Length: 245
Image (cartoon, rainbow, N blue to C red):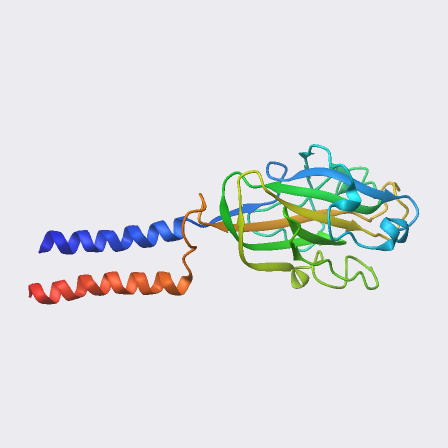
């Protein structure tokens, strides 16, 4: 009986540990994020794509192979964040607010992506961007809509923005396969001339992805289900101890 109780308790711990270990987080960085292409203008954001924010990959045309994005720094605290376990990224290191010889990126839309390395279930995406960003799953599903620019005094006035209070968020359950991509279309509207050195008009992207169920088999356990599982197993241990007495 004593051995059975020990095995039951061990099984409860193993089951709970396995369920929680199935979740993983991925933060933006030069190691996880690629830059692909951009559609830009030297005059204004209104002259790009007919003044319409792209909500698909079609306006980008034939998308080339991606290259690692550059990590950006923000020691002056212009941007909120970065999110825990992530880093702001951009096409070039000079896009950051504290970059030596900072250069304003051209007005337009910059395409970044994260490639999933295995089948899993995408459960959440948190994102910050300057000025704003749209998030698409590889099949074209728009998970997060871009925020309204408003006065564009800093970043977008609507979520998602570069402010933690205007963080863009997705929660749900989307199946992904190995090699599928999560796309980030970052808008650079700005107020300063494109290409102006030290113009104070940076551009950056920061995200945190959470996945569950790596390998893609079975359903993703919900927190309530995990609680019931743990309660039931530990209750069984208590019952057998009472019987033993």
